[in-house]
Length: 305
Image (cartoon, rainbow, N blue to C red; front, side, top):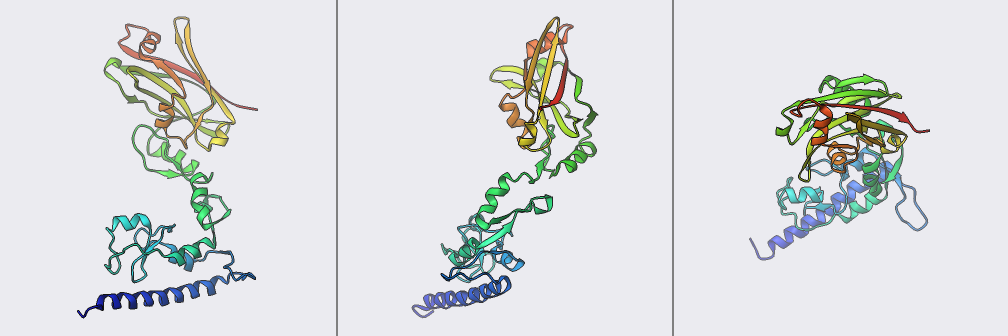
């Protein structure tokens, strides 16, 4: 190759990329017809399919946010995928380098886009760069399955998860706002970590999940019962619940606000936000010779006025 050949090739490709990009942008602007201001700045406009296609990463197809990278031929990809492809463009195999697509980042800044949970009920419109922050806390975002017996990747709205718990996990479903459950375990001294089957209560037209687990709190083996609300945190605060265990004229009680299933059962457990019963006391309440757990947990749910 003649001296300077590679530099010339790169310069030509760079210029070609600029022309291609200008053509694409012209089409986008023609389709969206942004309002012109007196200062000549780009007006705000709602996104269309054409803009979305430009902002989709060629690798993961997710929408891109700064820094948006491009190869010398103009193929764009997000910063996460740039690391995954080991600095090689997956389309043309050119080395990516550190070229920022500043023009596309500027176009994104002018967009107003709907929330990704629009089909679930969120009809607000947001500036492109505010969209992600909103979606992290959108009250219409999907919920994770609250089942604690295994890692479950199912997500959905509340009714979808209720049906999923009943049909796929075969959990016990009960109607009513009071309950009386007995948890049984043979050889409890041999069990350091255990999770009992989830129970779901239909109460006030809403669903509540009762959890019961055995785990180590520091060096001490304990049991813990707590309630989670199938809904958002703000809705959960409208309810309270109490739990009680006891025998032999002694009892332990707990009263609190159910945690939203937005918080994982592990997070609630680790925060100790529930009724905690030391193993020795649980076996004392169980009676007999303390060789078998037979712990009765009673409780009720009520709505705060």
